[in-house]
Length: 288
Image 1 (cartoon, rainbow, N blue to C red):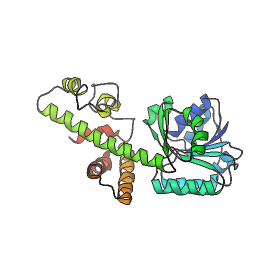
Image 2: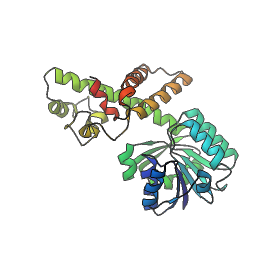
Image 3: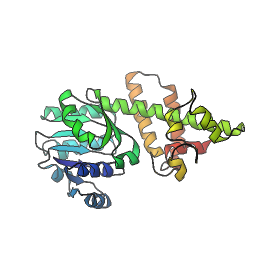
Image 4: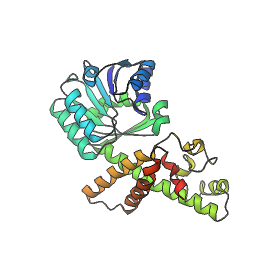
């Protein structure tokens, strides 16, 4: 299948490479020449514009920084440029309202489109083990699913347009709260004279067990390999976690949802990201 891929950053580059490995003809575009060079090395054909990449494409996949860019790229470079029979997949993490707006515009123009944000981070993007949370019609989901399966381990239909984004921001709000709680527990345990490994051995098989502890421990040398073992480099940047928390709080306000812990998590990551936005979000333990 001819697939245009727009946005080849830390996540998009690995995703595009996995589509090539799956046998697809990937037509890549990014504003970064370094990203285009890496995509070329991975087997993608590269183009000088998003519009050019979309010509003759049977599918378009995008991985872009924010909702305004997604809206502009689809209105200017994708809708009306990609063939009418193409299926469109936006894998960016953006606000629910913009996702629904862009999909409605695409559908009015005759396209099938889904919002399909991801969970898993850079390692999962490179390894093809992402989880995709997908919003859109049954028809659009059915067309998008085989493409997403080439880049991930799980592809879950969350419901109508925008529901993929809703699932993503709710999940990441929970993750932020969970990580802060995990860091506080390890910090308190140490101050009370409890060895971190001993606390891990106890809590990881007790009621305090959670993903932030057993899969992504914020304490170096404890649990499986994680960014904490690499000076909190790589993984999921705190600035990106803050972005997702802001999206979650905007959505909560619009829906009238009470999210006191989510709001407090945003405040904590806001302060941390001022100086440490590039560090993995588990680095929040450094504040304790």
